[in-house]
Image 1 (tube, rainbow, N blue to C red):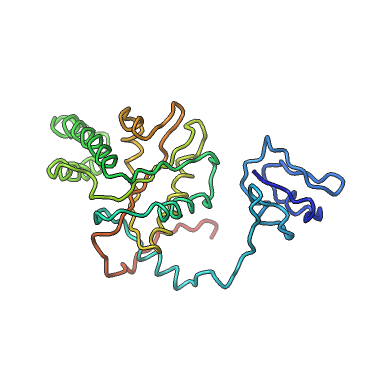
Image 2 (cartoon, rainbow, N blue to C red):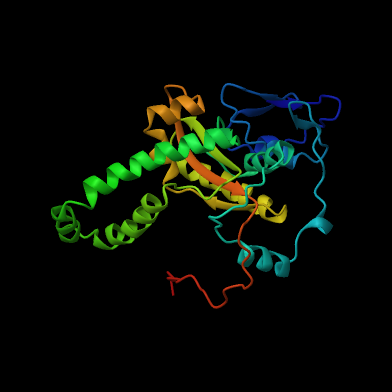
Length: 276
Protein backbone atom coordinates (compact mmCIF):
# COMPACT_ATOMS: atom_id res chain seq x y z
CA UNK A 1 0.00 0.00 0.00
CA UNK A 2 0.99 3.66 -0.39
CA UNK A 3 2.42 5.13 2.82
CA UNK A 4 2.68 8.84 3.66
CA UNK A 5 5.57 10.18 5.71
CA UNK A 6 3.90 13.11 7.47
CA UNK A 7 7.21 14.61 8.50
CA UNK A 8 8.38 14.89 4.88
CA UNK A 9 5.07 15.86 3.27
CA UNK A 10 4.80 19.62 2.61
CA UNK A 11 1.24 19.49 1.29
CA UNK A 12 2.23 20.77 -2.16
CA UNK A 13 -0.59 18.74 -3.74
CA UNK A 14 1.44 17.39 -6.68
CA UNK A 15 0.27 13.84 -5.93
CA UNK A 16 -3.37 14.93 -5.59
CA UNK A 17 -3.35 16.69 -8.96
CA UNK A 18 -1.74 13.69 -10.66
CA UNK A 19 -3.91 10.95 -9.13
CA UNK A 20 -6.09 9.53 -11.91
CA UNK A 21 -8.01 7.33 -9.47
CA UNK A 22 -9.37 10.35 -7.59
CA UNK A 23 -8.45 8.74 -4.28
CA UNK A 24 -6.07 11.40 -2.94
CA UNK A 25 -7.19 14.59 -1.22
CA UNK A 26 -5.62 17.66 0.32
CA UNK A 27 -7.38 18.62 3.53
CA UNK A 28 -6.06 21.53 5.60
CA UNK A 29 -2.67 21.16 3.95
CA UNK A 30 -2.41 17.43 4.62
CA UNK A 31 -2.64 14.63 2.04
CA UNK A 32 -5.08 11.81 2.69
CA UNK A 33 -5.73 8.62 0.70
CA UNK A 34 -9.01 6.75 0.27
CA UNK A 35 -7.54 3.25 0.10
CA UNK A 36 -10.84 1.77 -1.04
CA UNK A 37 -10.24 3.35 -4.46
CA UNK A 38 -6.43 3.30 -4.54
CA UNK A 39 -5.10 0.89 -7.18
CA UNK A 40 -1.51 1.30 -5.90
CA UNK A 41 -0.40 2.52 -9.35
CA UNK A 42 2.35 4.41 -7.45
CA UNK A 43 2.24 7.47 -9.71
CA UNK A 44 2.07 9.57 -6.55
CA UNK A 45 5.29 8.01 -5.23
CA UNK A 46 7.07 8.88 -8.48
CA UNK A 47 5.91 12.53 -8.55
CA UNK A 48 6.51 13.54 -4.93
CA UNK A 49 9.36 16.11 -4.79
CA UNK A 50 10.02 15.38 -1.11
CA UNK A 51 9.94 11.57 -1.38
CA UNK A 52 7.22 11.63 1.27
CA UNK A 53 5.28 8.78 -0.33
CA UNK A 54 6.48 5.20 -0.52
CA UNK A 55 5.40 1.64 -1.29
CA UNK A 56 4.91 -0.27 1.96
CA UNK A 57 7.33 2.08 3.67
CA UNK A 58 10.22 1.37 1.29
CA UNK A 59 11.68 4.80 0.42
CA UNK A 60 11.82 5.73 -3.28
CA UNK A 61 15.05 6.55 -5.10
CA UNK A 62 15.50 9.56 -7.34
CA UNK A 63 15.95 9.02 -11.08
CA UNK A 64 19.53 8.92 -12.35
CA UNK A 65 19.51 10.17 -15.94
CA UNK A 66 23.15 9.14 -16.37
CA UNK A 67 22.14 5.48 -16.15
CA UNK A 68 19.62 5.64 -18.99
CA UNK A 69 20.59 3.66 -22.12
CA UNK A 70 21.47 5.56 -25.27
CA UNK A 71 19.40 5.25 -28.45
CA UNK A 72 22.22 3.15 -29.91
CA UNK A 73 22.12 0.78 -26.94
CA UNK A 74 18.35 0.40 -27.22
CA UNK A 75 18.71 -0.25 -30.95
CA UNK A 76 21.14 -3.06 -30.16
CA UNK A 77 18.92 -4.48 -27.41
CA UNK A 78 15.73 -4.49 -29.47
CA UNK A 79 17.36 -5.95 -32.57
CA UNK A 80 19.28 -8.63 -30.69
CA UNK A 81 16.17 -9.89 -28.92
CA UNK A 82 14.73 -12.90 -30.69
CA UNK A 83 12.51 -15.74 -29.55
CA UNK A 84 14.66 -18.70 -28.51
CA UNK A 85 12.94 -22.07 -28.58
CA UNK A 86 15.86 -24.38 -27.88
CA UNK A 87 17.69 -24.30 -24.55
CA UNK A 88 20.58 -25.93 -22.76
CA UNK A 89 19.72 -28.22 -19.87
CA UNK A 90 21.36 -25.86 -17.36
CA UNK A 91 19.07 -24.66 -14.59
CA UNK A 92 18.61 -20.98 -13.69
CA UNK A 93 19.35 -19.97 -10.12
CA UNK A 94 16.14 -18.97 -8.33
CA UNK A 95 17.67 -15.68 -7.20
CA UNK A 96 18.12 -14.70 -10.85
CA UNK A 97 14.65 -15.99 -11.74
CA UNK A 98 13.19 -13.84 -8.99
CA UNK A 99 15.05 -10.79 -10.33
CA UNK A 100 13.70 -11.39 -13.84
CA UNK A 101 10.13 -11.94 -12.69
CA UNK A 102 10.08 -8.94 -10.38
CA UNK A 103 10.72 -6.52 -13.24
CA UNK A 104 7.28 -7.44 -14.53
CA UNK A 105 5.72 -5.42 -11.69
CA UNK A 106 7.06 -2.18 -13.20
CA UNK A 107 5.05 -2.59 -16.40
CA UNK A 108 1.82 -0.66 -17.08
CA UNK A 109 -1.15 -2.69 -15.92
CA UNK A 110 -4.91 -2.80 -15.42
CA UNK A 111 -4.67 -5.77 -13.08
CA UNK A 112 -2.86 -5.01 -9.83
CA UNK A 113 -3.52 -8.49 -8.48
CA UNK A 114 -1.25 -10.44 -10.82
CA UNK A 115 1.06 -13.11 -9.45
CA UNK A 116 3.73 -15.13 -11.20
CA UNK A 117 3.59 -18.91 -11.03
CA UNK A 118 7.07 -20.18 -11.85
CA UNK A 119 7.73 -23.80 -12.82
CA UNK A 120 11.46 -24.58 -12.67
CA UNK A 121 11.59 -28.24 -11.68
CA UNK A 122 12.36 -30.58 -14.57
CA UNK A 123 9.72 -33.14 -13.59
CA UNK A 124 7.01 -30.46 -13.43
CA UNK A 125 8.03 -29.03 -16.80
CA UNK A 126 7.90 -32.53 -18.27
CA UNK A 127 4.44 -33.05 -16.75
CA UNK A 128 3.22 -29.86 -18.46
CA UNK A 129 4.82 -31.06 -21.69
CA UNK A 130 2.88 -34.33 -21.52
CA UNK A 131 -0.36 -32.41 -20.95
CA UNK A 132 0.40 -30.24 -23.98
CA UNK A 133 1.26 -33.24 -26.14
CA UNK A 134 -2.06 -34.90 -25.35
CA UNK A 135 -3.81 -31.69 -26.34
CA UNK A 136 -1.84 -31.39 -29.60
CA UNK A 137 -2.61 -35.01 -30.46
CA UNK A 138 -6.31 -34.35 -29.93
CA UNK A 139 -6.19 -31.19 -32.04
CA UNK A 140 -4.38 -32.98 -34.85
CA UNK A 141 -6.79 -35.91 -34.92
CA UNK A 142 -9.83 -33.64 -34.93
CA UNK A 143 -8.65 -30.73 -37.08
CA UNK A 144 -6.23 -32.25 -39.61
CA UNK A 145 -7.01 -35.89 -40.22
CA UNK A 146 -10.57 -35.37 -41.51
CA UNK A 147 -10.29 -33.72 -44.94
CA UNK A 148 -13.62 -31.97 -44.51
CA UNK A 149 -12.12 -29.73 -41.78
CA UNK A 150 -9.52 -28.36 -44.20
CA UNK A 151 -12.23 -27.64 -46.75
CA UNK A 152 -14.28 -25.76 -44.15
CA UNK A 153 -11.22 -23.76 -43.04
CA UNK A 154 -10.72 -22.55 -46.59
CA UNK A 155 -14.39 -21.67 -46.97
CA UNK A 156 -14.53 -19.51 -43.84
CA UNK A 157 -11.23 -17.75 -44.61
CA UNK A 158 -8.89 -19.29 -42.03
CA UNK A 159 -6.91 -21.48 -44.39
CA UNK A 160 -3.56 -19.65 -43.96
CA UNK A 161 -3.50 -19.98 -40.18
CA UNK A 162 -4.83 -23.52 -40.44
CA UNK A 163 -2.09 -24.60 -42.87
CA UNK A 164 0.74 -22.86 -40.96
CA UNK A 165 -0.15 -24.65 -37.73
CA UNK A 166 -0.16 -28.12 -39.25
CA UNK A 167 3.63 -28.67 -39.70
CA UNK A 168 4.33 -27.25 -36.23
CA UNK A 169 1.97 -29.74 -34.61
CA UNK A 170 3.31 -32.59 -36.78
CA UNK A 171 6.90 -31.77 -35.77
CA UNK A 172 5.99 -31.88 -32.09
CA UNK A 173 4.12 -35.16 -32.45
CA UNK A 174 6.98 -36.71 -34.44
CA UNK A 175 9.70 -35.86 -31.92
CA UNK A 176 7.46 -36.68 -28.94
CA UNK A 177 7.78 -33.45 -26.97
CA UNK A 178 6.79 -29.80 -27.26
CA UNK A 179 9.37 -28.00 -25.10
CA UNK A 180 13.07 -27.82 -26.02
CA UNK A 181 14.35 -28.02 -22.42
CA UNK A 182 13.35 -24.63 -20.95
CA UNK A 183 14.80 -24.11 -17.50
CA UNK A 184 11.65 -22.36 -16.31
CA UNK A 185 8.16 -21.42 -17.38
CA UNK A 186 6.60 -18.25 -15.96
CA UNK A 187 2.81 -17.99 -15.92
CA UNK A 188 1.11 -14.64 -15.25
CA UNK A 189 -2.01 -15.46 -13.25
CA UNK A 190 -4.83 -13.25 -12.03
CA UNK A 191 -8.55 -12.93 -11.48
CA UNK A 192 -10.39 -13.80 -14.71
CA UNK A 193 -13.06 -11.17 -13.90
CA UNK A 194 -10.69 -8.19 -14.30
CA UNK A 195 -10.87 -6.59 -17.73
CA UNK A 196 -7.87 -5.95 -20.00
CA UNK A 197 -5.72 -8.43 -18.09
CA UNK A 198 -4.44 -10.19 -21.21
CA UNK A 199 -2.93 -6.92 -22.45
CA UNK A 200 -1.45 -6.12 -19.05
CA UNK A 201 0.14 -9.56 -18.81
CA UNK A 202 1.98 -8.99 -22.10
CA UNK A 203 3.41 -5.70 -20.78
CA UNK A 204 4.75 -7.54 -17.72
CA UNK A 205 6.24 -10.33 -19.83
CA UNK A 206 7.92 -7.79 -22.13
CA UNK A 207 9.75 -6.32 -19.13
CA UNK A 208 10.89 -9.80 -18.14
CA UNK A 209 12.16 -10.69 -21.62
CA UNK A 210 14.39 -7.64 -21.88
CA UNK A 211 15.80 -7.98 -18.37
CA UNK A 212 16.41 -11.68 -19.00
CA UNK A 213 18.20 -10.79 -22.22
CA UNK A 214 20.74 -8.50 -20.57
CA UNK A 215 21.34 -11.24 -17.97
CA UNK A 216 22.17 -13.79 -20.66
CA UNK A 217 18.87 -15.67 -20.35
CA UNK A 218 16.93 -16.46 -23.51
CA UNK A 219 13.15 -16.30 -23.66
CA UNK A 220 10.15 -17.09 -25.80
CA UNK A 221 6.66 -15.76 -25.29
CA UNK A 222 4.41 -18.80 -25.21
CA UNK A 223 1.38 -17.41 -27.00
CA UNK A 224 -0.76 -20.56 -26.98
CA UNK A 225 0.35 -21.68 -23.55
CA UNK A 226 -2.34 -19.86 -21.60
CA UNK A 227 -5.04 -21.41 -23.82
CA UNK A 228 -3.76 -24.95 -23.41
CA UNK A 229 -2.86 -24.84 -19.74
CA UNK A 230 -5.81 -22.78 -18.52
CA UNK A 231 -8.28 -25.32 -19.92
CA UNK A 232 -6.50 -28.36 -18.54
CA UNK A 233 -7.64 -29.56 -15.13
CA UNK A 234 -4.38 -31.44 -14.68
CA UNK A 235 -2.32 -28.33 -15.47
CA UNK A 236 -4.41 -26.15 -13.20
CA UNK A 237 -3.93 -28.61 -10.35
CA UNK A 238 -0.18 -28.73 -10.95
CA UNK A 239 0.00 -24.93 -10.97
CA UNK A 240 -2.17 -24.59 -7.87
CA UNK A 241 -4.78 -22.39 -9.56
CA UNK A 242 -8.01 -21.42 -7.84
CA UNK A 243 -11.52 -21.16 -9.28
CA UNK A 244 -11.33 -17.51 -10.40
CA UNK A 245 -7.71 -17.71 -11.53
CA UNK A 246 -6.88 -17.41 -15.19
CA UNK A 247 -3.55 -17.71 -16.98
CA UNK A 248 -3.10 -14.48 -18.96
CA UNK A 249 0.40 -15.00 -20.30
CA UNK A 250 3.33 -17.40 -20.29
CA UNK A 251 7.07 -17.16 -20.91
CA UNK A 252 9.72 -19.82 -21.50
CA UNK A 253 13.19 -19.10 -20.08
CA UNK A 254 16.54 -20.83 -20.34
CA UNK A 255 20.16 -20.60 -21.38
CA UNK A 256 20.19 -20.51 -25.19
CA UNK A 257 21.27 -23.59 -27.12
CA UNK A 258 21.59 -21.45 -30.25
CA UNK A 259 23.31 -18.09 -30.74
CA UNK A 260 22.09 -15.70 -33.40
CA UNK A 261 24.86 -13.69 -35.07
CA UNK A 262 23.12 -10.99 -37.07
CA UNK A 263 20.62 -8.22 -36.61
CA UNK A 264 17.90 -8.22 -39.26
CA UNK A 265 17.97 -4.72 -40.73
CA UNK A 266 15.48 -2.97 -42.96
CA UNK A 267 12.27 -4.11 -41.30
CA UNK A 268 9.72 -1.34 -40.85
CA UNK A 269 6.26 -1.01 -39.41
CA UNK A 270 3.67 0.13 -41.97
CA UNK A 271 2.36 3.54 -40.88
CA UNK A 272 -0.95 5.10 -41.78
CA UNK A 273 -0.92 8.84 -41.18
CA UNK A 274 -4.21 10.49 -40.31
CA UNK A 275 -4.88 14.20 -40.69
CA UNK A 276 -2.60 15.11 -43.58
